[in-house]
Every structure is written in C-alpha cells, then in structure tokens.
Amino acid sequence: MKTEMNTKKLYYGFPVVLIGYKDSKWKYNVTTMSSSYSLGNTLTIGLASKSNAVANIKKYGEFTLNIPCQEILNKVEIAGFHSGQNKIGMADITYDLGEKVDAPLLDECLLNIECRVEHIVDHGDYTNFIATIERRVICDEMLNEDGSLNSRDFNPIYFMGDDKERIYRYFNSDTKKLGENMGCSAEDDSICG
Image (cartoon, rainbow, N blue to C red; front, side):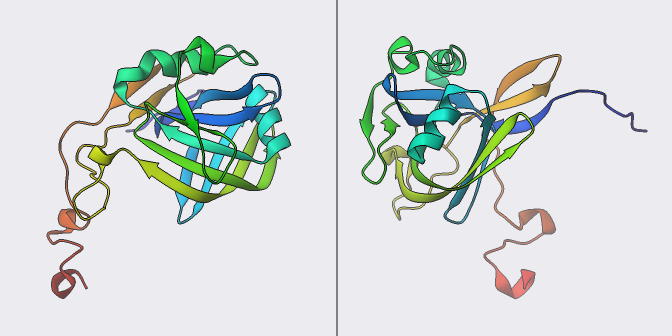
C-alpha cells in the first residue's frame, strides 16, 4: 500500500556541495546547496533566484563546485545561511583560486570542480546554471594508484528530508560493482553482454 505524500519539498538524497564564486562586495564567497548533477563534462546546479550567489554567478559567469567532508559540517552550515555576507570569512574557509575560472577552490574539500556557465534557466523561484566543467581537482587520498576515483573512501555528506525535517546522511562502507546485482560484473562482457 502507498499513500500520497503532501509536502512542498522533498530531498531524497543529494550530495551537499559548497559553491564558490566571485563576489562584487566580498571579492570571493561561498554558499551551500544540494541541487546539482553532472553528465560528462556538463554540470548543472540550482539555487534560489533571489540569492547573492545567483546574482554574482550571473554577473561573472563562472563558479566552483566543492565537495566537503563530514569534518567541516560546521563550515558547511555557516555557508548555508547569512546570504550576502562574507561567509568565507565567517566560516574561516581557506582557498586557492582556480586555474581556469576566477573562483575559489576550497582547501578542506575532497573534490573541486571549476565551471564556466553556458546557459541560465530561471524557473519559478529558482535559477539553474548549466555549465561546462573546465577542471577537476581531487585530494590525493581520494585517488587509486591508477588515477581513478577511490569510490570506497569517498564519503560526501548527503541531504535528505521534506518541508517538516531535513537531515544530513552519510554512506556506510558497503559497496557493489556495477552489474553485480544482476549476478555478474559489468566488467565481464561474456556474461553481461
């Protein structure tokens, strides 16, 4: 049996990210969000249209997406509030500037992605930025010896909830390779085709 869920918001598990951007008032700034996805070299983010971040990203046309770890959740929360304020200073966030975009790469984050805005879509109270990924930078311990992502240890913060309660969640250590749930491995073409 299923029941219709009446809620204005539903977050069914999205990675929490910090968006770094050039700020006309504070030089550089950051905001917390959880509405993003990537496909190939394209990254899309969605933010509240009336936010300081949206105004500045529209003005400068570039940003960074930074994946934080559990250890800096206090900084993540500070960056999620206080719109228009110097949140980098308030949260004591250190950074270097990107090589491909003029926006901050946050030092304490596991992964940093430099993005250049290609399209802007305003929809209702939200603005979606569709961007080209210009560069990816990752902590050395998040790479395997062959240079691939260490997926087993990569443990971002996830955001879940509805309009009544929102929480942070984390991965457990269980993993399965793509295709294993079908009784084979995606790497074994002879069985999985």
